[in-house]
Image 1 (cartoon, helix red, strand yellow):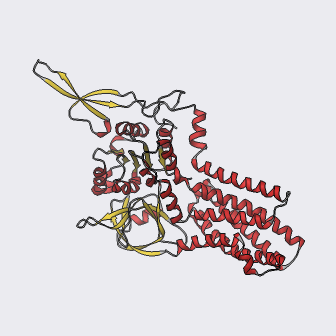
Image 2 (cartoon, one colour):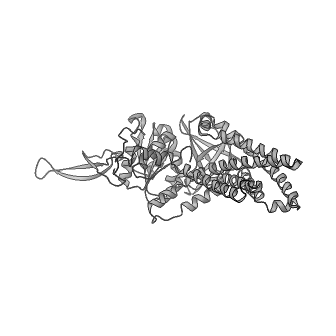
Image 3 (cartoon, helix red, strand yellow):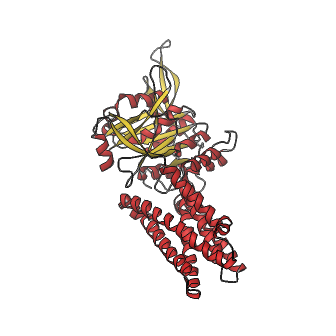
Length: 501
């Protein structure tokens, strides 16, 4: 990762806190918050009775990265928390498969294989259900600050729960392929209508899952995101409907084998209860689809702030917004809106910057209108900042929008570094004032005047000044990865939402 300075680490390099500040003398006034901590120093003047007061600005030397290049790549890039979670889920499923093979001597029972598939599918859907995800956030962030940082910094990685969704989903597809093979064999052995329908629905399910997995490949998802959403949604709905048909006919086959009623088999079937939970999660989200009035506040030709008044919103929540609810959704972090007279929360807003056709269209529409919202408000990455005593918040461009919710909450002492082009002209005095209110010494880096910053070095300086325990960044994937990698390889916990979070 190129950060305009040597990134080659050495064994025995400095760790977080092992700082060697470089004193730089400068006369008053101070050069501003971006220059680092300062301490007054008294020096003799021209005469015995004359003294000159100067400030000594201490710049932290950016320490070398820890470990070797290979160890850093493996630990901080390839062995990400997302991939570790994915690997654990797949390993557990592999152990279950080996156990079934051992118990049934190489030919597992199709009902047990179906149950394993249904269980994984349920887990995958649960980790896209808002209340369930919020519950995990609450559990992982409830520990006190007295716990060691080594524990708290790992709990903060709960936002990588996407590894549970994709890991369980992929495992479900593998189990269903095995089940479909067994169902096909059962039909060949016993060519009856129930077995035929069971086999056909199984193949339909496998086909839908194959479409979902293929469209979710990172490269395809980045290039064709709208198509990914459509495939994921409609193939998922088709699979869920087919799953119910499949479950009923599979139960009829079992009822005939057991010589009992269909209802008895369903009640005693794990598949039935798994699909009930999966269906309930889908209904819970879409049953809260609402058309809400939005009040735009155009900040510039590059950004707008959309205000909603239908409910108040506490800090640290996000919401899905759309004008075409069946084809595309856009998630935004919400910012509480305050009534200037009462000081109470009377709504919420989201900051939208020009990042594509949909966002540009919202910016160019200054009039009151309606947009669709769906599901319950969802916690995000910044909610885990509660785990730390002091933090540094980093944002580039419109990334300041999600950070405004954290700044409003005012729970964790923080320093702010915001790099953007013409902050006042682009986002308005109000947004800049909110940043200054949260951190009077915030570093607001105007890239139009100063160019792009050496962001790793500047962020590390703020970590040094504030003795922060962690860094949180909201930016584009490239800068996010650069800062997270630059901090974690120097022993500073850092968190940023990237593609596979």
